[in-house]
Length: 102
Image 1 (cartoon, rainbow, N blue to C red):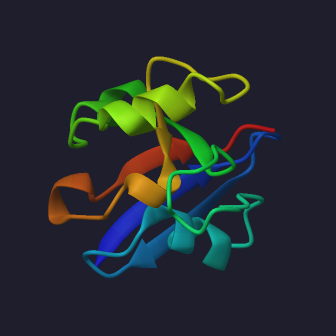
Image 2 (tube, rainbow, N blue to C red):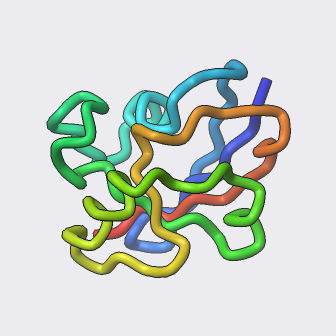
Image 3 (tube, rainbow, N blue to C red):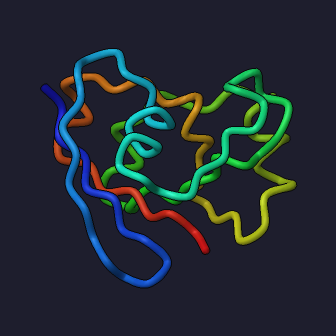
């Protein structure tokens, strides 16, 4: 099981546990976080934009060029932004912290 800490726009944190291979978007939605994922992971929007804690960002596989292009459209995107629909949980990501923008 992979542990993820979500920090909301209000600063409140919630911890989740998910199986290896789960999409970060699905885990966040199961926690009741306001990530739409309007395109259901087809990379046609940026409604599942999250900001990964800088200390954890290097543990993620590199984003595709298509994901990077969509992140350019996401309000409040930062250097450690990712689309939650494109992040699959692996043991290497255990304990990561993800911020959900407002």
